[in-house]
Length: 344
Length: 259
Image (cartoon, rainbow over all chains, first blue to last red; front, side, top):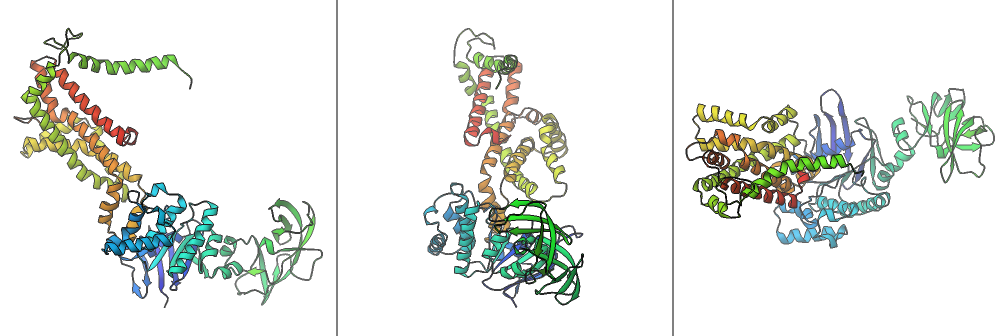
């Protein structure tokens, strides 16, 4: 049994439409798990169910074998970091951080020491006596993190904590969060809609869509082997075309072209997909996995050109770094390597 | 901005129209005439001395302060939690309740005064003083609910949620997190309600009895038989009091935050 278990969690506000549909999720101790998905997919709802801010209609939530489904939020001992940071405006940084400890009626000397330690870990030693409005966004974020961590929570919950920061700071902060999280070995759940952010920070990722976890895997596995079309689209696969199964690993496209795929396959899945980066432009057509088409649009992306090619199996996007620059209207042959063709 | 002379002079006219009567009152309060007359003949502070020596003025002034203070305090005690609940919870018929609580600002004070008099004092034999306080509580409550409510709505709800996750119960959070962050709204609504209660005539008029006379009522009674400038002097004192309160509100919060 895992450290954290969500079992058949169902959330519905009106009992007609489900926000979460029989959601199951297991998190091991010390792991950082991300919930990734577009807005409205239920990732924040899942986090709020874990936090105790939303009571699920059905299902169970367990931490360390204890059933916490009915335990109110203030007794759960989880640290939570909000998108808006949610610092207490009327308290100094030190008082903000000490807030949770004071409620636990710890000795003043113990509180002072713990606050000092966590401010050192989060790089805030100098700012203890300031008020939240005197800090920058990145600093407020650290305070919110420090305040959640100082109570030594059983779980750390992060609700899009980086989305209010500018791009540069966001990268610095996510490295920081990962460092602190692994230093303290604290089990964490991180909600985000940014796949790069999520891949760089997570031990495991749950890709969510419409209240369901579509895939729960390591970032590498999700990046390389998306299991569903939704996951594939979400992480940057842009070419999708229908296939019919001939035999294991061998498919036929609508125009009769044979496609081979050496990737994992399941009988009921019959949509081929490949990233624009993985399609190659070749000089001549082969027996299988090649298709010809006319360039309709050419876009300069910086490191490469993107061609929108109309082929007999549908429109394909191709990113090509090659020195040869093709013109709109040119006919080119595309190769879809069998080890890159994924069936979803 | 383009200058529009016509509009500008119209604005000044309106301003003058509102202000000149007040100015005249101020001037007459310093007059040596035995009745309120304008222009004044000589200059004196005597009428101010007379105001502070007049026992019925002083008694009713103290009573007015007491009633305004108690009415406003009661309105805060009831109104702040009510405003919180209206702002935060999905109360059934929330908008309806909101408009209901604001109704005393729309319903004339005369109606409130009459209703309390007719149904609380006469029907239930409520003592007149307590009836008076109830009436003033009623006219103060809408200010509290409206001003405090808008302050709470501007407060980030997640700071309350964070407080819960840190181990605070909802009640503790209300006192430790919500209240300290809405003090400006509480203070502003206190001032507004207090001024309104203190200056209120209709409610006080209905709910006066032997020994229970509010300052505006006592002032009106006085005018019926006397017409000396001590009335002007008292009005000036009241104006000054209101100006000082408004000044404090403006300096601490800014009047814009209240409306």
